[in-house]
Amino acid sequence: MTNDTNVTWHEHQVSRTLRETMKGHKGCVIWFTGLSGSGKSTLANTLDHKLHQMGIHSAVLDGDNVRHALNAGPGMLKGTHGDAFAERFGLGFTAMDREENIRRIGAVAHLFSQAGLIALTAFISPYREDRDRVRRTMDAGEFIEIFVDTPLEICESRDPKGLYKKARAGEIKNFTGIDDPYEAPSAPELVLRAGEKSPEILVEEIVAYLGSQGIIG
Image (cartoon, rainbow, N blue to C red; front, side, top):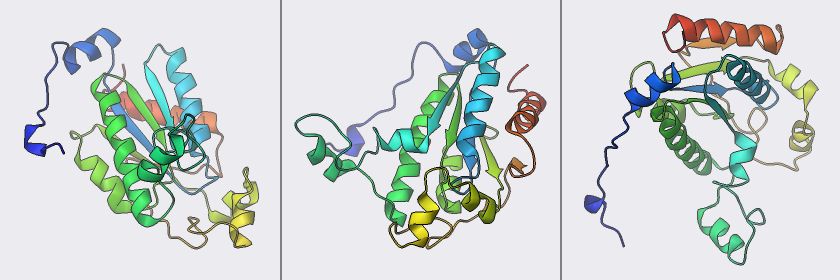
């Protein structure tokens, strides 16, 4: 077993500052949070496309995609030992599993940010403390929390994956907004009303914010 005292952080010859200078913008983590169906993934992908058009380096980390790989459960990993690894390291949707899911993705997003990328994360991340814990791992101004504030009734009427219907029928347990709580951010950098404005208009608000903070030029 590895002794944690033998693990040392290595500084690299190519610093974060050098990478950001080469890219022409700062790295950061933009953390979209909100109910299922609120529009998080749509906004993250629309923003990613907008930043790409502007010549800005970004990458999207989406909740479902991450659970197909980094945090995959049984039956989702290919290979001889796929299920064995998934049973040991995969995550479900209990409060403890959700906490670990957010911890892992926060660590990955932080690495992206340190490499000078704008990391766009789209996760329900229902618990305030889990999100705040990720924030505390980063420098001031590096973690940008965006609350996609879409009312439950609108999210449920959209129900793009049919998850609310299954949750109401009792086929899915621990579903946020139905039988699990969602804790809205207490002081997010931005609150977006995705039930009232188009993704394109909301993305312009995000880009303006990034400019006002000196993250992009």
